[in-house]
Structures are given as C-alpha cells and as structure tokens.
Length: 226
Ligand SMILES: Nc1ncnc2c1ncn2[C@@H]1O[C@H](COP(=O)(O)OP(=O)(O)OP(=O)(O)O)[C@@H](O)[C@H]1O
Image (tube, rainbow, N blue to C red):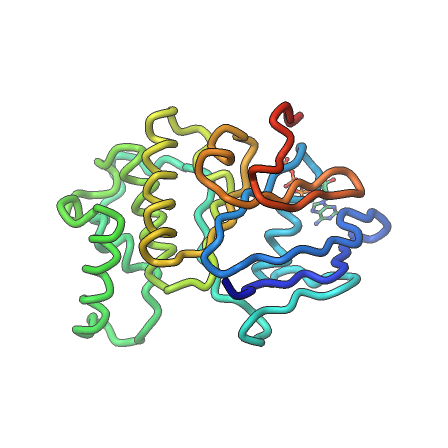
C-alpha cells in the first residue's frame, strides 16, 4: 500500500483553545480507517483539516502525490429528503458531476454516471425520485453523489447514525465492497464501535490531548465511548 495522507505533528488551536496537539498518523491508499473518540474531542476539526477548510496551527498534512488539497468525497449524517423532493436518483447523483459546464451531459459523463449507479446498486432505482426512496436508498444516493467526483478519499461523517440497524449494515457493506473492488480509501467518523470493528481495518482514536492509531485488531475490546 502507498500513503495517501501523512499527518506530521498536527496541532489546531481555536484562539486560545488547543483542540488537536502533536497528532501524527498515516492513511494508506485503499485502507478503511475509523475515526473515533468522545464528543467534542476534535473529530470534526480533523475532518475540516483534511478537507482543507481549516489550516493546522502546528505541523502539516502531506498528501501523496504531493498536492495542496485532496479531492474529498463527503457523506454527512442521514438527513431525510421529503417525499416532495422531485429529483430522480440519477439527477441527484449527477449534481456533483463537475466535469463540464455544458448544459447537457457528454457521453463520457453519462457513462460515468451509469458506472457509479451500477457500483452503488442503484441502476434499477435511478428513475425513482429521491423523495420516494427508502432511507437506505437515499443514503446510497448521497454516497453515489460523493463518488461521482472520483474522490481520493471518502469521508463518512457519522453517515450511518440515525439509520436503523439493517440499513446501517447495508450502507457499510456497500462501502466495504467499493473498498475491496475499487480500492476506495475511507475514513469513517463514528461512535458505533461495532460497525467500526466489523467494517474498517484501521483506527484513529482521539482522546483529550492524546491519541492512539493502529490496526483495528489492536483496539481495546472493552473500549466504550462517552
Ligand atoms: N470554530 C470553532 N471555534 C472555537 N471552538 C471550536 C470551533 N469548532 C470547534 N470548536 C471546539 O473544538 C472542540 C472539538 O470540536 P469538534 O466538533 O471537532 O469535536 P467532535 O469530536 O467532532 O465532537 P462530536 O463527536 O460531538 O461531533 C470542541 O470543544 C468545540 O467546541
């Protein structure tokens, strides 16, 4: 595996409040890492650093290949879209397709859409309006929308919270399949240690002023968050 992200002695302070301190870790290409830790410990702050909308106050984030910013796919916590939401799943996914500024889709863009819909098992549902899709289908549509821009890294930010257990599993099984078959690199921000253990191979555990990182097999089996 090659490194995608190398965080070197990262620190982040908001005015006089130090949130992250001397944080060093790597994210390998094709890995699935759970970002865990109690409420308020700095997980969102770290995500904002990775996305590039905050700059570290100490240390640095180095990307491989060397660039200022990664192309990040981001899937937020599930938010329901009402039944009246009129876009089809296909159109919804294409909202994030930034290849051209033409008012119509090129053949290449249509093919890319077909491919993502297939990879996320949404082909048969592509004409369904998002408003009429189930919770799991909606979350898969958000996932497909994040993937259409071919991100270097997919961040699932509590993306399974507030879904029922079966749907959480369905979404994570799909992410794991995308990781296995297409080498997708994933950071899963979660409080759900069961899902983290089942679906991800690495962990980064932020504690107040400290952290732990390593293969998931080394995470304390008795750990409880919050
Ligand atoms: N823009 C900001 N200005 C000042 N303080 C901030 C700012 N953003 C976050 N913080 C503080 O930084 C700390 C870390 O917040 P952050 O949202 O990163 O935690 P978190 O681990 O994501 O929490 P949760 O699990 O509850 O989402 C908190 O004490 C928060 O109040």
